[in-house]
Length: 96
Image (cartoon, rainbow, N blue to C red; front, side):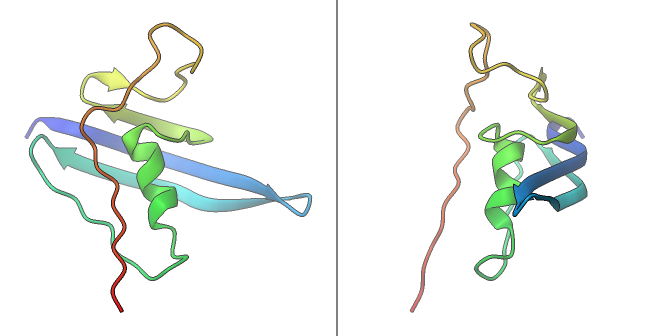
């Protein structure tokens, strides 16, 4: 299996009321090229928090994120070789 997306040991934390709050702890995702991945959960469960670093939209505080042959961890947004995510769709659907 050729991995298209791989993240290992990802940690994401936010400062909340002066205290660090870890919302991802040692998160891992492996997806093969052409594979579809769905992240399901209730509102507020952390679906977007998980999906954004894996798509290159957001960063992790610790860990390693790769998309194809490109390492996303540590890229500088102002750099000319900054990453532009390819054809990744983040979608939310609301049903009543």
